[in-house]
Every structure is written in structure tokens, then in C-alpha cells.
Image 1 (cartoon, rainbow, N blue to C red):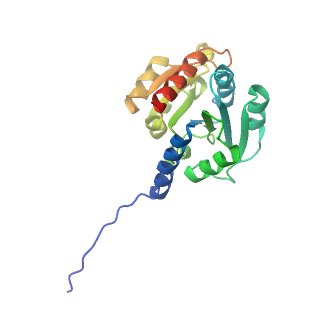
Image 2 (image 1 turned 90 degrees about the vertical axis):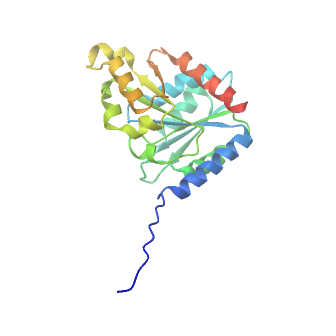
Image 3 (image 1 turned 90 degrees about the horizontal axis):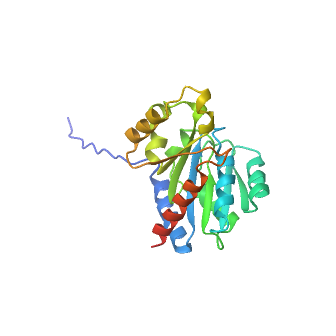
Length: 223
């Protein structure tokens, strides 16, 4: 019986995207544009939060927005109408996530030459977007009170990946069985380094704290 050498090759199916994402981060650094990848479930309040946040930041930073959805342009229209900042819609043609190549194509279309900060609102779900590196400088997510405080246990990757977790709709706490402190513990269990900021986008509560978080992050990134 002949001796046969068996060589095991372990290569991530995401390896090419990871390389492209790293190259995109270097490119963005050279351009001085800070990109934030925003993830959440549908209905968690991404667009409402972005609107309040941009209106707080737009006198301090030059901001653009890329709205990703399977179809429609309602979010991009809403952002442009309610904030006045540059906004474009990205259609994923049925895909439930964005990758680095799609992000780069969107940034080229947006034209970042005069932008300090770009928000990328990813497709609404807690699974696929967390699996792909978009090339962003920062990953954040929004968890809303109606979704329940158990989501960090059920969807670990998105919490492990996020630098900032925003807990939205805290004005609805009296109406839902949601333990805020237990949720914070579960987030820290998944990601001990995550910053957690509870807000009510509807009422504007906590928006200044989130805005100042971004200002500080961008300042440190530029140093």
C-alpha cells in the first residue's frame, strides 16, 4: 500500500473579503474618512437614531450616509429630507449583508472627498451582517427594548463584533418584560470591551452621549 501524504488546508471562506476590508480601511485612513457600520434587526430604530444623531453632529462633522436594503429607497430619502446630509441607497439584490467590495462601491458613488464621517446602515438582521467585514473603522449595533433582553445569548456574533451597543426605545421599558441590567450583563458576557449606551431615539434621550462617543473615537483615530 502506497504512503499518501494528506495535507489539511484551512482557509477562511471570508479570507478574500477580509483582505479587501483591510485594504479599504487603509484607504479610508489615507482619505481621513471614518466609516461606521451600523447593524440591527428591522424596526430597531436605525434610521430614527441616525436622524437624531446626524442632526446633533452635522455642525461638527461633515457627514454622509449609505442606506443598504434589499429594495426600496425610503430610508435614504428620509435621511436626506430630515438631515440635509449627502445620502445614497444601496440595493443588495436579495443579499442579506454587505461586504467590503459592496461598501467600496457605495463609497465611490457617495464621493467621500469632503466627508469626515460616513454611516453605513447595514441590511436589517442580526446574523448575516455580522459575518462579513465591511471595511468600516467601527462596528455598532442597536438593540431595541421590544426585542427582549435575551438577544445577546441568541445572536452572539453581532454582540461580539460590536464596539458600541445602543439599547434603543428605553421609553418603552414600562411596557415590556425587559431587564436592562441583565441585558447589559449579557452583552458584557459576549464582549467585555463593548460600550453600552441606552437611548430613546424618539425622545432624543442619550443622543448627545452617543454623538460625543463618535467625536472622541474619530479624534483618537486621527491621532
